[in-house]
Amino acid sequence: MKRPEGFKGFSIMSIAETLSLIGSAMTQFGIGIWIWKTTGNATPFSINSTLFFIPNMLFTPIAGALVDRWPKKRALILPDLAAGIITIITLILYKTNNLTLWFIYTASFISGIFNTFEWPAYSVTISIMLKKEEYGKANGLFSLTDTAPMVVAPIVAGALLPIIQLGGIMTIDIITFVLAIAAVLWVYIPDVRAETTEKVSLLKDAIFGFSYIYRIKPLFYLLIYFLSANFFAGFYTTLLSPMILAKTNNNSLILGMVQSALGIGGTVGGLIMTVWGGTKKKIYSVISGGMMFGLGIALTGLSKVLTLYLIAGFTIGVFAIIANSANQGIWQAKVPPELQGRVFSARRVISESISVIPMATSGPIVDKILTPIFEKSGKISSIFGQGKGGAISIMSFVTGVMIILVSIVAFLSPQIINVEDVELEKAEEGEENTNI
Image (cartoon, rainbow, N blue to C red; front, side, top):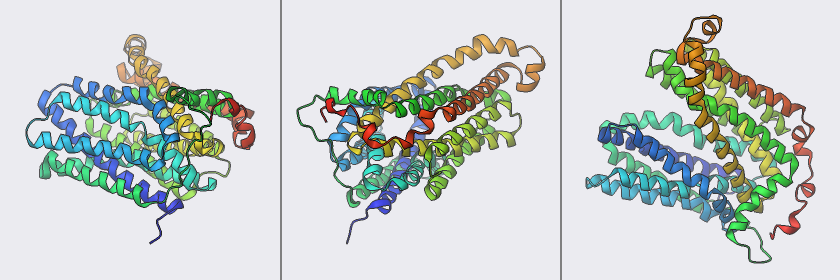
């Protein structure tokens, strides 16, 4: 029987990977409950998240270089295989009453290392398996790997945990890992790798992506636009939960509904892009999606009732996926497939580095600067609310407006709006000295 290829083959892999990530999210949900019941503290959650994030920052450039050098199936299978082995060990420790917090910390760090392969590997695979006009649809489909676990995993895991316990949840997770690996092995993927004329160090290969992005100015300016939008969005995402809780008298149900609206919106956005693929000129989908994304964030800051929160959350979820999928399609079309592992990994490192700034500063800005202003009644408090809720709300509104403004600037920039018109030959100028 002929192995699936093209969009059909990629769809099989994406669906299997989505199921695998839902299984992983269910395990993380169960592990979180285990940590809370075992320690009763919030600190382990922060430590666990940090230990997963650090290797994503450190190892992503190296992973990108290896993705370009390796057969793509190896890079696609490795994250699932590593995660599956870790889950099996965790299950054994849990069943024998030997599971410890320190093992969970170690497992998170190791998982973070292997997770760095997934995004660049799948991004490159889209480029080598599909036609350019299918990139938007494929990126929309693959976006479900981010959004579907947000919607499905908490509901399913919450319902099953009392029945099958954490051990049963991890067993389901292991089965989904096997399905994901089997799908990659079954599908036909062309073997495209970087050709080297001389021995190049892994470190030099790892930093290649950064210099490439800087050299290709239209892509560099497009990245600057996306970084600017993500930078401002970071203030919103970091403080969304405390804003909703502060403005609803700590109503966790409303918070859960808003978070679900974000996840459902992202899923709908992914399905829209899977069917539609975006505008013929993808940069229009990127910028218009960015504007609507900013509008949703601004609306969140102005909202005071559940209906508006849900509309804003859904809007943010839909248009974030549309903008991201179209943006990814542009990069896949303009960067040669044999370079994409390194270039896309460099993009990821830069974007994650920028996100640290709003993570670190948004809380102090609200606590030290804005909250004292909103502790008093006044015209501005009547619009956004009083206390911390009002302080975070005005931050959300301002950041949403800033995203709209940088989107307008991007639309007016000839370098960005014409990024797709740059001929590939021009985009490859200066490659004589890359040792590729």
